[in-house]
Length: 265
Image (cartoon, rainbow, N blue to C red):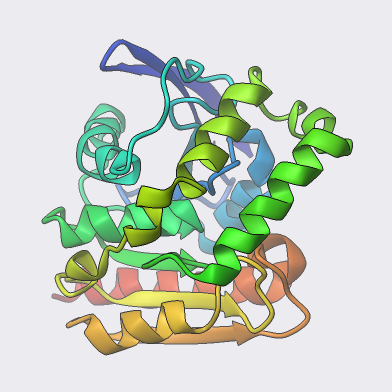
């Protein structure tokens, strides 16, 4: 296993990233790019990228977005379109920097939304893996984010998150404040879902405190490209942790099928 850490500078911000290559890595440009959740970072993926590299044989790239991990801390409040900025500005430039033209994007929560905006916004990708995606804001989501705020202020959550972020306050409040702002209740990316141009693997728990099955149902309804669904039981908001084996197996098969289709087009 080869793991390389580096930094990418974009828009005067320093973003950390990591490349993972297994001993059985495919000697091609095929690559998986992981997009983390609203409180995620490189390190918060834990061993999942390494396990994906082994299961798929592909190079795996992960990076911490602005305000997370060891990347430049947030210096202003996030705006209504912060995921659009990541999807349409930062991500294309990051892919150019690492020399990946047509990745399979694997997004979790906010990261899944960013993946959909990226592809629906006109950027070609080899496939989308969408774990616990957000297409619109549900009351359930808002209530869970309110509970996260209470936990951050009254429990050890801040200390725990501090293991994964150099500026934990920047990471938490940047996410929490925008999601709980009155204007964000109208956030909706269905117009991007309608323009998805590649197959999607939808992975969702039937008991996710941050989103219901309505999120993947609207993707299935609106996407013009094929979709597959995997509904996991005994699982929360993080399928790659709560049901790791089932999640990795589903992604590995999807990646294998996607790469085979690409090579015979």
